[in-house]
Amino acid sequence: MKVLEAEFTKGFIRLCTDGWEQGWHERNGGNASYRIKEEEIAGICEELEENGEWRKIGTCVPGLGNEYFLVTGSGKYFRNVALKPEECIGIIHLDQQGENYKICWGFQGGARPTSELPSHLMNHEVKKRVSGGKHRVIYHAHPANVIALTFVLPLEDEVFTRELWEMATECPVVFPDGIGVVGWMVPGGRKIAVETSRLMEKYDVAVWAHHGMFCSGEDFDLTFGLMHTVEKAAEILTKVLAMVPQKRQTITVQDFRDLAEGFHVTLPERFLYEK
Ligand code: 2HA
Ligand code: ZN
Image 1 (cartoon, protein in one colour):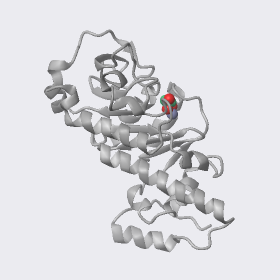
Image 2 (cartoon, helix red, strand yellow):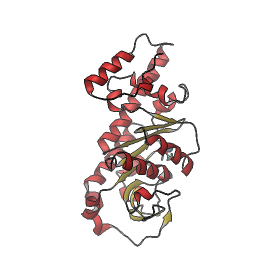
Image 3 (tube, rainbow, N blue to C red):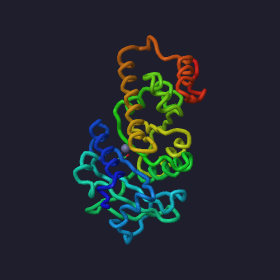
Image 4 (cartoon, helix red, strand yellow):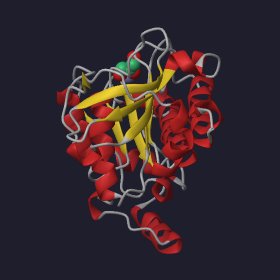
């Protein structure tokens, strides 16, 4: 089968187009990666080139040794992914040690994987371990409302989680583990990757102050849906904050407890503080 005919490639391209249509990917903003299943690789192996040269990842991810990833390209625009997938996205294969990658498909015209490859792979390594192999998608976007909140709310996991939970009843059900926040850092390297992957031990969402958001999930629907839900809650919060100095009423701590019981989710106590 051709790479472009594979269901996972179609799902990946659709995520990119959906993110562009949401307004989360100005210029070359944002990036995405998918940890490809063994059977999916078997289905497209005729098209994979295994003689490429090894390049440094920029970090070490031994937990991902020998795995294949579909990733967006550095400097590529999400709005172009569906039009020119062979140029904008590519498949990479990691070595046994998880220190180097080679390009096996795509990235035509000399493109390279996303500048955030260290963050993507370190997040994948953590998520593969803590989810027992279920999580396969890491998605980074620049949604305006979440970014706006990083200028206004304290950069604390407890505050971001609680404030966003209060904005829509479905939020604690969609992200019951909460949200982590990374203070401003230089993007694109190992340091921010280490900070983000530490948060991914506990959360499926990490906010980068004054920059954007990372989400992790089992498939494209869940991961895109998570980004969408958090950003929608952030949009409601920015409206509320713009309208009044203080909320007149909200979802209470007792409401959250009732919701947790009704929907069979566990909400960590540290987010259920009295204000
Ligand atoms: O431009 O989003 O974080 C790509 C990015 C870097
Ligand atoms: Zn970014």
